[in-house]
Length: 114
Image 1 (cartoon, rainbow, N blue to C red):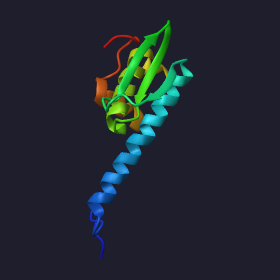
Image 2: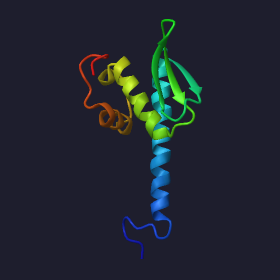
Image 3: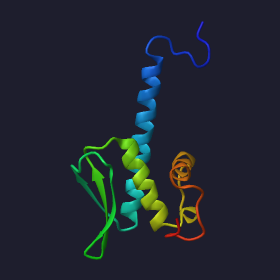
Image 4: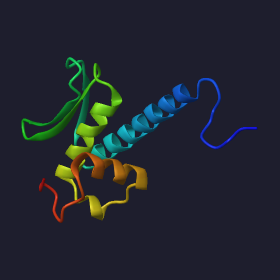
């Protein structure tokens, strides 16, 4: 008999793998959101710090550190999205909205406020 919450051997590994896949999916959705707002996405090896948002020659660029894990990069991406967008004015899946709130706090009335 299998009880709720027990996956048998390897259950913890499967849970960790599922969480990582979810964070990767959230990261991809956040990157798509930034791209839709005209932000250039660049993937570069930056030493594992996650990257971040910068303005290069007047253009917003989000650097994705290919050396960093997806959790850290997703958190930086969530911060960038919150800075650039009115999060309340765009549709986001509930788990993505929750992730942004966990990273930066509740949405503010205007983009750019942190």
